[in-house]
Image (tube, rainbow, N blue to C red):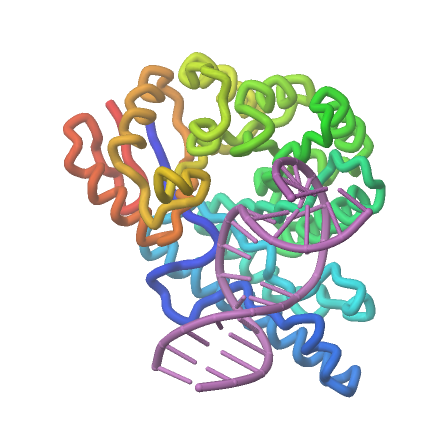
Length: 320
DNA sequence: ACCTGTCAAGTCTGG
DNA sequence: CCAGACTTGACAGGT
């Protein structure tokens, strides 16, 4: 059984390498000429993609194949202020180059649209804005020439005082989406509202893969034994080219338990790893820790000491 | 060089 | 019904 590790959006070890640089709407408005406004936006976008390329090289150098792209690659991409900006034309070539690199090196890429991207909001304008945001993400993936194995990870959304109706609204909206979006959306259990069991059921009904977040499950469950559900959760990935994806992080403090700690607690993860070992299926781990890639390196260093674990390289391991 | 309040987007709670 | 919390990285303006 092989487990591959990756991290989210930015590196804690590479300096001056943010892929999420932006400008505030207020400051964009302060720039007096249209030409200079567009130049500023364009230069930020190109800088973000250039830093993404640097992150790709860094990842390759450390055997990291699993990586989540930031949602902020293109500054103010779906903001009304930038509606005259053809950002795609400005970054098309860079996206192609990134995509070529990703394919050549077997990178497994995904994105996680922000928490205001909600497909089940009762407010039509919120749902519409969310779909526009999904299309923005889709355009990045398509610009990179990535196939449908590049996923968009979403949460189910709010409960709006009635979970049953809210789940139904999710289903209706999901079914109405363009096929290019439907084939990329996957669902993750969240830390407050929709439990792993509920998300699994929804994923089974819609035939979409489920990303399991073990920290969220720990925050939000109804006494379910996760391991009993693991085979069914992994089974939602049967038709996919990549292994199931598991999100891993540790609570920051006892009080602030929903927040992500700097590093991943090894003993907590080992518990899961042992249990998952009995299921015996390969999976990918997305480390969601404040210290990003540094948290990944430290976790691997700790796992190296465990007798039943054999390291394959800097970012993957094998369990006999 | 460092510090702090603010920022496009939503939802939920509590007053 | 409205203000504030929630959460995150980065900006922007200040020292």
